[in-house]
Image (cartoon, rainbow, N blue to C red; front, side, top):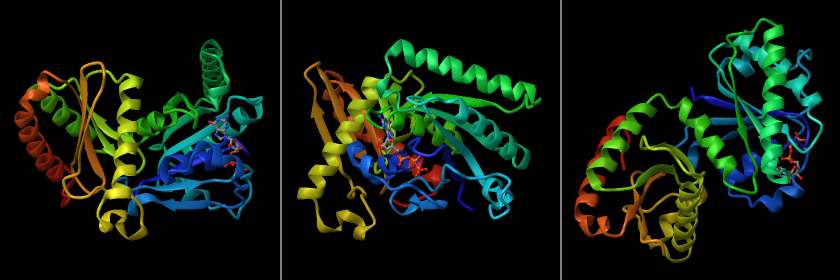
Length: 315
Ligand SMILES: Nc1nc2c(ncn2[C@@H]2O[C@H](COP(=O)(O)OP(=O)(O)OP(=O)(O)O)[C@@H](O)[C@H]2O)c(=O)[nH]1
């Protein structure tokens, strides 16, 4: 069975928008016209994405006492529960709902990972963001403590669909659900060390979620640059690529051996290579190191083989 990610939260908190922007390439402005979700919406993203997950969007007004919702079934097979809190609104009601949802889910399935998206932070100043996160996490954890749920751990992320924070947060959620994640991180670290590369990411193309990166810290700017490179590559391939590219209407997938090189004006080079149908590796390389492109390409070949073995997939 596919691991399931549940997205919950109050009405209009931004659940459907997150799902559409991350997995369906909807532009953030278009989400203004999304209709209210009135029943559980199940989205299977595995046709278009490496991520073999089901995303369930649970409507804001779910009532936990309503017997029409089979909570054992909903929480039983869930890998992660994302709870969206609208940071631009008064969040007291959201915190009550959050407490009800996580305590119920934890009692049914203690393996679930609880991820709290403090969402719509595009409207807040940097200081206000930090203060809001501190306040929300303190209140939420105090309530759990009072209910003696000390083993229940909440992770907090500041997100907005208007920048890359939502992709970064989703990347962190997905990485925790991939059992092979630490193997991938080790592979990428050794690839970076042996190729003279500054930083590398393994991306799911359609969602721009990074499945793994090497051991060095991620800076948002590098991540954003790599995301933008993927957009450029997809747009160019849509216009000039072969007809098989659109994957029979199911969505985007790379063509065999897709390659893309972009030279930046700070003497860095972005280098993208396809790894499997849905995965690409994106490297940030200094231009003097890129003179040894043969070594990098050879190492990418080895990396591809290793990743295929880890996931047991065919290119
Ligand atoms: N400023 C800002 N607005 C957002 C963001 N994400 C979503 N919105 C807006 O919030 C509104 C509600 O978004 P929806 O995605 O429909 O919310 P929902 O939680 O799915 O709502 P229900 O279907 O009622 O459960 C829309 O007008 C979105 O454009 C964000 O990151 N920043």
